[in-house]
Length: 395
Image 1 (spheres, rainbow, N blue to C red):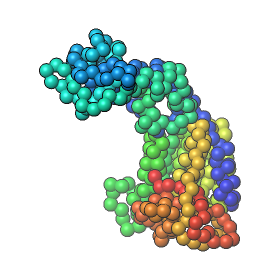
Image 2: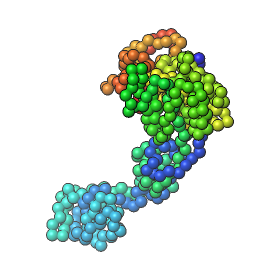
Image 3: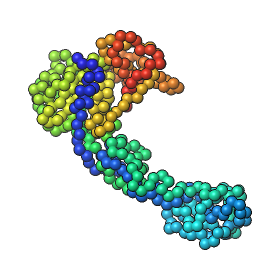
Image 4: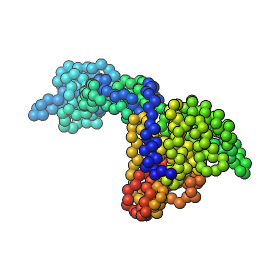
């Protein structure tokens, strides 16, 4: 059994790269950029009007304002640039339109009265208002998104603005999700008294979807030959295997033995943590397939997957994943031998973490009340209110 910090370091040492790929802009949210993105032209590309109103040429502030301006026409958004014919002329103008030649000030409609073809300004003229000047956001050739950034919804808008209909991203690993156990039945089946429906596989599938990975679901019963044949094929086909169950000390927990027979090198088995102590991790050296074998209790599967696999995935894609920190709202007993993942809710005002009561790592229903887990490293003294600890947010 190894300490939790050593287990994480061993997992991160097995980071892998899977190359890059070009994908559609519409598929890019949540992926990691594999290229730097530069502005293809000044942004905005022209002096852009920010309010509906009239465009005028402002005279020196010392000069009295014109009594009124003759309305020359309309400058609509998307129309070619017009020019003011005289200093005492104006153009009605729409938000988003290019600023007309000779104009330097926008007067909103709220400050103008237009009648009989003339515009009468109802307030003092303020020069150079409501103009979004060319290049004021970004100059042509400026770096706006860096390689390695996780693409957000806002980034999608930027990529569209600079004409990136396709974008180069880090390629994601192919992942198989494998549940084991004769007691499991499909979600749409009526379980017998000694059976339960599959849940861990769907938790893992949903967690992968959060990162843009569509995992493939498999189930293998507790039969050595069936496990051997299926795992041999899956090791060849996938970059990562996520297994749930079959790694503890029961007589039907065959996974570690079979993985060894198939050439998967055990990196560690059992971590000094609760929940999730029986976690098994290894790698097939020639196939470069990583194997995360989680214990079958649902909270154990959840914690191990989001703590270890997610950090491994980010490292493989070139991005460190820093856990957030929260303060404890109460004292929590420590364990001198085991690191503890404690389910918590956050106080809506202070943001401090308060521990929740539950029935252990098999209590799947407790996750519905949980906002996340605080990680309390092993130590001999209790954790006290106000201490800051790592926080693993529920996804």
